[in-house]
Length: 561
Image (cartoon, rainbow, N blue to C red; front, top):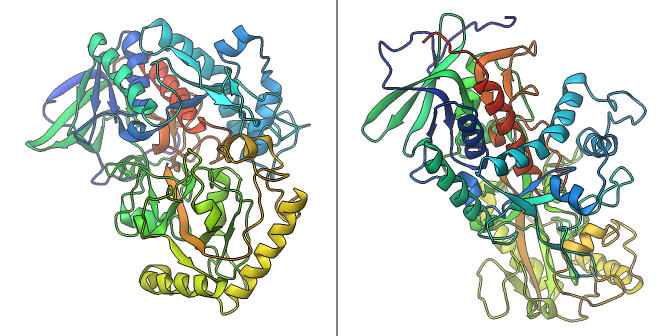
């Protein structure tokens, strides 16, 4: 093959062990959604499967997920008579993933041939995967529950994140979740893992926790044929006659990789501590091409909450509230506060050429006292519920007092921020910003950022608030107290890593596959280039590439061990 291995490292070895502790057809590394999908599909196609999980319990990040996956043209859509033509869906995916290259008149929509093939494969495979998982008894799928922008329950799920784009011809129906009896929200991810784990036990899949894969073995033919895993009692070598499928999550919790690869400061993730990027190191040592390594599935977290621990189950999905703005250290709005989390989170890494700094490193979610005491239910993080004390909220009776309180907090964070402090004119600028915002709220038209224009913003972010002409905006009270929370960039997990082909084979820089090596989920370079096509795009990618990896690996002849 082209681009053959030119060096070895501690993560790979050309010297096979004298004997293997365990042998199987397919080794799956990880135990999240992608891992269990890969294991189930490989087992159903006749392969023996061993799963190796670094953590002491199965589930990975899926344990705290809302459990939704994005499946264009899925069986439930077809049953409901909702058309989802392939050409239109591919245009949406291309428009979101490569906006500067997108060309709807091009045969590949302006994308490279490989990128276009990956998108085609996603569309063609997602629905096949959910159908096969149901047939083999691993996981049935149903519409994810949702509501319309008018807060009316919709049986075909929630509205698409980007339903306002002309390329998006489908408003509802692509979002699916496992048929567990639960709802889209906290607990659904764990229920899905429980479902898939139960199937793994019925199917005879060997699931082993506390096995941290640290090394891959290649044979004389340069094929990946096994791994070495560290356990509490020593190392274990595991041979893989047909392939090794990594579904081991991203690299955020390797501090050196996080600091070197991610732009600006990313304060925290929801990913478990076991996600340390071992697959990226292994694949690179085998000559793998990599992509998207400066990216995550973006969001925002309260910086003081994750300053030291770097991990939280909390995420500011949709910034709650109507009398609320998000401003930078100059007191200026910099983003549509109701944009969905992945797009909003990216604003933190914008570099200012004049000040030579990331001026949006920390942003401030500012809201009035009426909002603080609003008792509407819903996901409000980082705004606490009324009566719920949280010392991360700073308050002031006037804009000047609020500015003083914020700057005092920034002083405590200076060692981690490069000394970021409020600009001297923050309070006066914030007052002007709120005055301008109040005018927009009165007319219902946000002339700066178009807040509340997209149906998705009204359908997701309002959570019961119905005040005003544009119910995503309402004028601030004329007098305080006013409140603020310090927000920074965060993510669910990193989504950069080794590049894959349409069969989820890891490829080298000549786009040739590295035999025996596969990747799926957040440990690979996101085929969508980090774009969040809609709710469930993360798990949708996990589903598709896990399925493709399992199908391809199971079809291979046994390799020389």
